[in-house]
Structures are given as structure tokens and as C-alpha cells.
Length: 382
Image 1 (tube, rainbow, N blue to C red):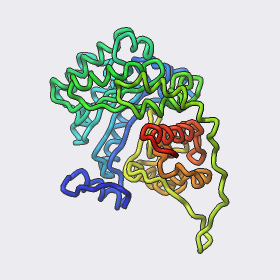
Image 2: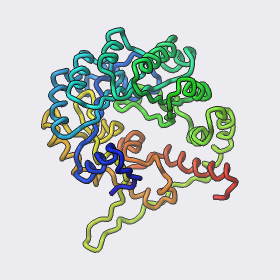
Image 3: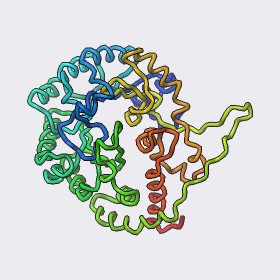
Image 4: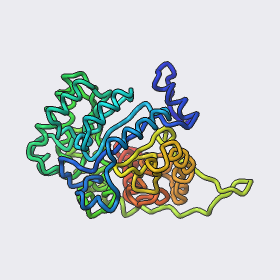
């Protein structure tokens, strides 16, 4: 069984453990649309219709409802709707109400900046199990710089409070880039004021379809900035950025490990080392054009076609490819950081190199500096 502290007194753990043992789907993410009300400069999904045209079309409400029946029959319980901004999907209200009626535990993954009165009334009548709200700053000024909306923060805060007023459980995620990193303390205080837990994301990837569709490379923190910010509390973000300047110099000592010879087992088959990713054993992600992978980060990589061949067959094909996609690249097997490289998963490698079998230099440098900085904080020698 995959490494996890299972609490079998909890029904969620019992369900997940059984699903892993049977290799059956339990959760699914639907990326309904690439449309968004914000124009975030680092976004890896948002496109114009013209940019999206070569990659497929949006699926209709009826197509999604047919897929819903298929995943329901397959055993999926947890369904997350995202985008772009999922609530901008044409026919969202009809689709959401039907999905709610089928009994899925629905999560809305949203920027919470585009809700109309009808959307809020929909959530009041049919409250989602959870709302995962992404934050891009702690003021209208920062939202203007990051998303292009000069009133974005006010809109988001209003809808967060609306969810609270109707009893919806909320989680917040602060997406950190160079243009908003100094808002980190504001987000920490806001989380306390709202009594809502939050996480931060410093992992910024290029656009899935074409790097020219976003400005991710110019927005994301450097490996040293990311390592330092990840190690400090919100109130210490200025110190973290100051420390990053000297930490960056340590990259002159960084070397990629050599690629090992291919090892074989006694029966002649090649040995593999697999990433332990619990979600990959019981989850799938279907993108706006119908492509399916086990992780939304790998959506633009080799994918299955559930709308064409059916969900069950697509699931079996995806399961059969798991051993190939989730093996560590050869170069990683020789790396001293392997056991500590928490971000070296196939999804992150695809985002950085377009292949699950090639390490992303940015992640390698970040992992190296993260270990070094933690040792420095603890007054230890590497």
C-alpha cells in the first residue's frame, strides 16, 4: 500500500484505501473552459478562442452530463469543477444543478471574481461540498497588476464572505509571483480574519499549449526566492527575499548528477523506481477539449479520449500507462536529493520539459537550494 497514515475510523480513508487496492476511480477534475474573467499574466490555461481553436472545442453540457453518468457508474464520488473560471462555462448553472442532483461531492475551484446573482443563488440552493478559492493578492492594486482587474480583490472578498454566509467550507490558495509576493503578510492576516485555512503556491508553470500565451517565466520567483519564501512565515517575506540574493550565488556549486546505466532485474526486465502519488491511482482530470490524464498538470501530454472511447476504457488505458509515466528519470535515480525532492513528480516535469521522463532544471535548482537554506537556518552543515 502506498505510504500514508491511514485512519480507518474515517470513512474517507476507508473509501480511498479500498479504491487504491482495486485501482478504481474515486475523484475527477473537470476543466470546463479556458475562458476567464481575469487576465493573469502567468496563467497556464487561459486562451482566446482563436488561440484555443487548434487544440479542440469546448464540450457541450449534454456531453458532460453523459460523461457524468459514466464516471458515476465507475465509482467516482468527488468531482471538482475548474477552468479557466468554471462559472463562465456556457450552461454552467444547468450542468452544476444536474451534477449536484446525481450526488457527487462537488468542489468549485474558482477565482471567485465573476459570480453573477444567478450564480450566487445557484450555490445558495445547491451548496458545493467545498470551494477552493485562488487569491492573487491582498489589494485591488495588486489585483490590477496581476489580473488586470482594478476591483478584483473587492469582488473576490465579497464572494468569499458570501460562501461563508451560506455555510460552504472554503480553502484559500495564494498564488505567489514576483508581482505579488510582498502581499504574503496581508494574505496571512486575511486568513486569520476570515478564519479560513490557506496554502501558498510558488510553483508557476508555462502555458500548457504555447509558452507565448503567458508571461510565466518573467513572473515566477527564482529558485532561490522560492526556497527562501517557502521557509519563512508571511511576516518574514522581506527577509526571505533578502536572503535569496546570497543563496542564488550557491548555484555556482550546483551540478546535475550523471545519468546511470540502465539496471536490469534478475529476470532481465528493467528496474523502475516509481513516484508514490496517491491521487494518480484513483483520480483523473478531463480538460475542456475532452483530453484525459491522471493529473491536470499533464493534460497536454499524451492523453486518453474518454468522450470518444468511453470513460471506462480510457481509465484502463491510463492505468496501463502508469508504470511508464510515473517512473523516475534515469538521472534522478543517481541524485542525492531524490528522497527530499518533493516537487519531482511527472506533472511538474511535464510542465517544465513537456516530458514526464526529463527532470526540470528549475525544480532541481530549487530543491538543491531549499535543502541548503534549511540547513543554513538550522545552523547545520550540508
